[in-house]
Image (cartoon, rainbow, N blue to C red):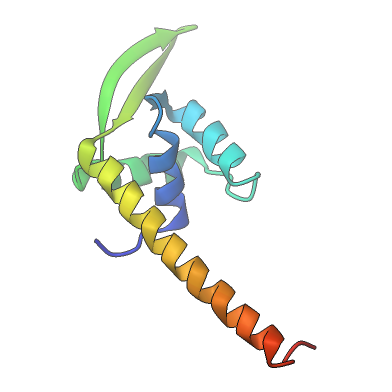
Length: 111
C-alpha cells in the first residue's frame, strides 16, 4: 500500500480503539494532531467514503441522539493493517532522518 494522507491516517487511527461518529472523529483527530488538523464535516465524510470504498472502514450502526442521526464507523481488519503499515513506514523514515541529522551534527554542518 502506498503512503496515505495525514488526514486519512488520523481518521483510521482514531477508529483503532473504538467505533466513532462524525463529531467524535473530528474531535479525536484534532486531539491526536494537537489541533493542527481541524476536519470540516464535508472533508471528513468525503474521506470516510474513500476509506470505505477501499475497505478500510465501514459503517457500524446508526443512533439517534437528541433528534440527530449519528452514524458510527468502525475500522476493518484491512484498515488496521493499513494503519500498522503506515506507522511502520513513518518509523523507518523518522529513523533515517534522525541518523542524517546526527551525521550533520557530527560533521559540524549546523548553523
